[in-house]
Length: 248
Image (cartoon, rainbow, N blue to C red):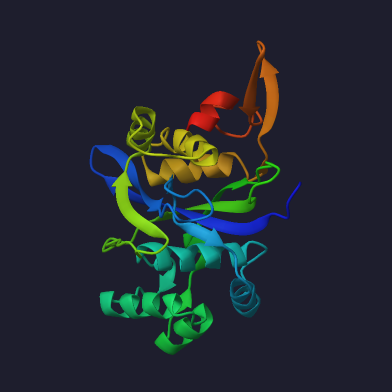
């Protein structure tokens, strides 16, 4: 790796629909952001030292800090609390979000409110570690979770400028029309998510393909350079021409 990867976590939040594919929550990053500015992504961000400290305090396994980061970032960016027990009221959630934006430690916010974390509410789905010299590299763990019934996402007006519930297929179609920008890992994960008719289907698939590190590599196929994934990694599309990736 040319650059030291930044540990990160992201949350694919599901909202089920009757007689229709489930929707996932996506955010549009502010164009001024250094990484993926203007792109549609899942809520998430880097794993902070405070996440590791809280993981040490409460336990929960090797990926506990990543799960905590995914929960914290989803509160910060979207105003949705997943895996927080008991579920906070709208007023409490607003105060928690304000505290995080003000730089308060997540552990202190939880303690003051008498709240704990249920890390098992998050299901491991994927791990992506690109290798692109000269750009910021994130080592990102993806998790799945059900949205709370009363989830009411709102933008934070700093990192995110738009939020929407969308099916994976609809998001892919919007990107293909040029109505949305998505980066390579997001496209591949949306294609995988588009296969599922329910949250339970997604969880079953995640358990069929244990999390492994996905590092896309370049192969020349019929004279055309492609960015490729392992064929047995659970993704329905495992190669895309480099020029198409750049246009996306």
